[in-house]
Structure formats: C-alpha cells, structure tokens
Image: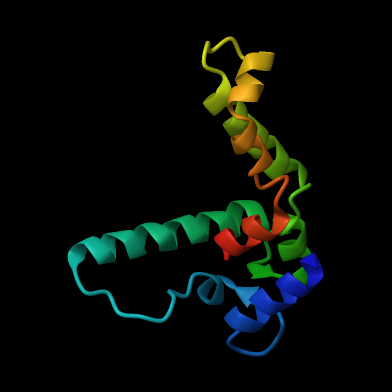
Length: 130
C-alpha cells in the first residue's frame, strides 16, 4: 500500500516525467490563486516548510532529487525519525505532570489520542502529509 501511495504522489507532482521529484516540483503550490495577504503568508509558510522537509528529511543523499525509495522511507510510519518524533509529541501532550513519564492514568485519559496517532493509522498520516 505504501508503494502505491508513493507512486501516486510522484505521479501527481512529477512535472517532467522522470519519476523523481526536484525541489521545484516538490514545493509547487496546489492549484489555486492567492486572494489576499493572509493567504500569501500561509502559502509562503507552506513553501518554507516543504523546502525544509525536502532538504532535511526526505532527500537522504542530498543530491537535490527525491526518488521513490527516499519518499517511501520518509513516509513509512515506522521510519525511526517519524516514530521518535511522534512519540515525543505524544508524551509531551499526555504527560500532564511533566515528569517525562506517562502514568497509567495519563495513558487511559489520552487513549483516543494514542490510537489515532500516525504510527497507528498510516493511511491518515500519508493523506494529511500529501
């Protein structure tokens, strides 16, 4: 399923047909026009975030091109970076007493949050990302 989603994303963003993504292809804004300054600010922020992800997280060999393998590694919910980041975020939210541990009561209180995580729901994670 992950390979299928990667192929679909590459197909949708790849403008030159080489089955790889350049930075310009990856940060292409979705179809639509910016109607006001607030919209432009959101678009600028989105572009900066996409550029950072491209350069720091996805383009593993830093050659300026994202291959299907690199995108698949990035999107894999079991990717070490993704899993560690997700776990840190989940603990930060659920650790009400800020002791850096989750007590059983905290886990139970936030159980719906944990079961809705990207680590548990790969399809949602991919859909939200792309």
